[in-house]
Amino acid sequence: MQLKIKNSDLSILETKQSLIIKNKVPDGFATGPGQEYQWIWLAAADVENLLAIRNADHVTSNMRNASKITNEEHLNFLKNYASLQRVDFVLLDKNRGAYVGGMSVSLTLHGFELGKYIGNVDYLGRGIAFPMSISFISYVRANISEIDDIRAVTRQDNYKNINLNFRLGFKILTSLEKDYWLMGMK
Image (cartoon, rainbow, N blue to C red):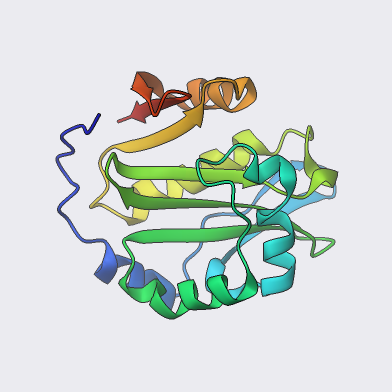
C-alpha cells in the first residue's frame, strides 16, 4: 500500500548539505553517570566499526533486506550519499568510543521512513533506544523542515521495536509486505 505523503516530493538535499557543512548533529544524551552518547555523521564513521554493528545478526534479522553490507557496497553508497534523500547518523559511547548503533530517515515509497538499530550487543537492554530515538527525531523536527510526517516499517513480531515506536508517538497505519507494520507519526 502506498500512502499519499504530502511532503514526499520535497527535496532535503540542500538542507542535508548545509547540515553536513556545519557538522550539525543531533544532541548527545546521557542515560546515567558515565553513560554519555554522541552522534557522528555516517560518512565520518570508521567503515569496519560501522559495518560490525550494522551487520550484526540481531540487526539484519529484523530488516526487510537481511543482506549484510560489504565494505565495497558501503563505499559506493558513500560516493552517492550527497544525492540521496536521506540523513544518517552513528551513535557512539562518548567515554569509550565504542560504536553503539545508528539512525536514519530516508525517502521511500511510504514517505520519510525512520530506521534505527543498536548493533553493539554490549548496549542492548541498557535503556538507550528511547533517548537515542528522541534525540534523533528532535533533530529532524528542528533542522529538516521538509519532513512533516515520519514513517516506520517494523516486523510484526518485533514487539520491542513496536512498543518503542508507540512510546515515540507512532501509530499503526496498515499491514505491509505480509509480515510488517507501516507506522506513522505527525
